[in-house]
Structure formats: structure tokens, C-alpha cells
Image (cartoon, rainbow, N blue to C red; front, side):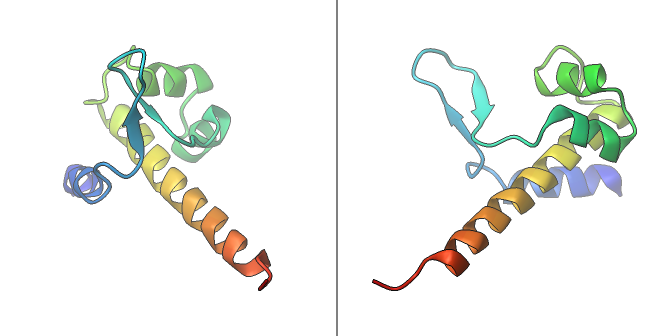
Amino acid sequence: MFVIDFYLCLYLNRGTKMHKTNDSKTKRHKKRVSFPVIAEITGSSVETVKSVLNGRRSKDTDAGQKIVLADMYMENGTNQLIEEVKRIVTFPA
């Protein structure tokens, strides 16, 4: 079930969080939740989180999938929260 949720999340969020940089073909998140927060959520070490999200460790393991999924959910929720706060605090002209 976890793998299905993971791939469903990837499908639903395709193209919304990542962009290609001009100087390389690597994809980077626009806004990323801090590594220590993801480590706390997943019960992993900060170094493991960094390694998985930077591509030095496999995302195919259970821990790797949890880290990637937590990062996506947290990033999506953070971006939605930022947009909602912007909407609330914007005063009419």
C-alpha cells in the first residue's frame, strides 16, 4: 500500500514542484522542508535524509520511500500554507 501511495503522490505532483536549472539537467525542489524536520518525521538520521534526497542513496528502499514521500507531502503542505497566508494577509487596494 505504501508503494502505491508513493507513486500516486508522484503522479499527482508531477511538474508542480521541480524545475530544471539553466546550468544543469538536475532537478531541484523550489522550496524544501529542512532535512532535520524530514529526519524527525521519518525516524531517520539527517545524513540519511540528505543522502536520499540528494541522490547518493537509493530511493527504492523502505526508508528511502518514506523520506521522499514525507518530503513531498511536507513541501506540498508548506507551499499551500504559504499561499493561504498570503491570501489572508493581502489587503484590498
